[in-house]
Length: 172
Image (cartoon, rainbow, N blue to C red; front, side, top):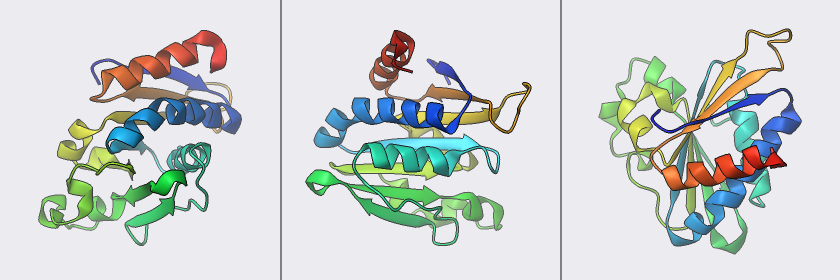
């Protein structure tokens, strides 16, 4: 990632706080246009937890992993909604993601749509187009089950800078 914010996350509360900051920053963009956020990380890294925290911070609920259905949708206030994609099975099943180009995940999200994609790193084209990228790594610290290094980057540097100012300003 070119510009990035690196955060050390020590608890689920820290993860939820970071996603609350992300929600505050993307709300105006969500009004004007769609927003795409990609999540990467090993199994169990906390991708779905962070998506859940983000959706709840935006006023939605009911988040669960879309692993077996590819996409779940969650309504948000003001008629907006979240498209929650998990492309792990597409990338690991022998299906080439390029053969699935008719899926909505390959088109820019429309106004009022927050598109979140877990395992976005399995498709470099999608990865390169994300407004924000959230890369979650286990830290080699005392308690690797809790401690994470989260790198935020992506195409929308303005959003990234706003999140960085809030996080570094003591709200994170």
